[in-house]
Image (cartoon, rainbow, N blue to C red; front, top):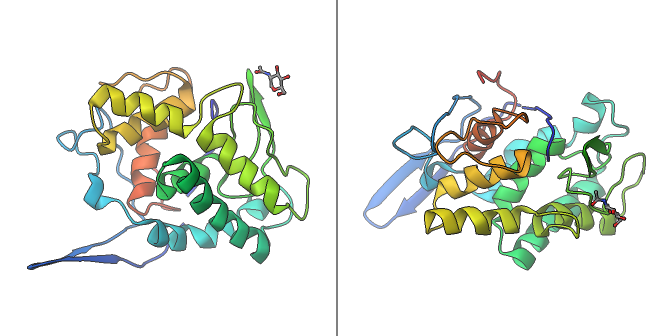
Length: 232
Ligand SMILES: *[C@@H]1O[C@H](CO)[C@@H](O)[C@H](O)[C@H]1NC(C)=O
């Protein structure tokens, strides 16, 4: 958080949701739409039904997770064991915190592209690990293999928060309280807070000096964006 990293991939897949008397096909697509404004459906932002489920989003991001360390010169690519532990860490911390697994995944991809050996960055605050947490203790920078305990810690630092700062759980609590419900823009606004520490609810593209496209990127990741060129 409080810094940038970009990313992206391509895939295919679509997911089908069926409901009584209704068969609806919703496709995840590797395309980028630039979203601005207040995060609402009226402003064009994706609604809950547009979001992929955790498994579908995981599958789309897996090809990146397998190669992101090498692509970024962050050390050896994630091993099969590390990738297995990463997936289970996300679902474990999701159940510990009540934060949706898919949201954790999207923020992790935004922050580190899922490379367990991502370096620690520091722009005022120390941001280590998979979720570039607020001065958390989890990190495998320069460490191979990365132990499962560290992978869980990195996901926990970013999601449950640390002694030094908020994680997704606290930020979502703030944005859900602001809107009065867990609507999609509560997630977009929480993403804004995770990146910049402040949110302008009418203009989620206001990065307060951090990554202007952060909330838009998360909305695109939620609908399947991985490697397509960003128009933001
Ligand atoms: C970061 O964490 C360390 C260890 O927990 C602590 O000593 C330090 O004060 C923290 N720094 C900030 C800026 O919160």
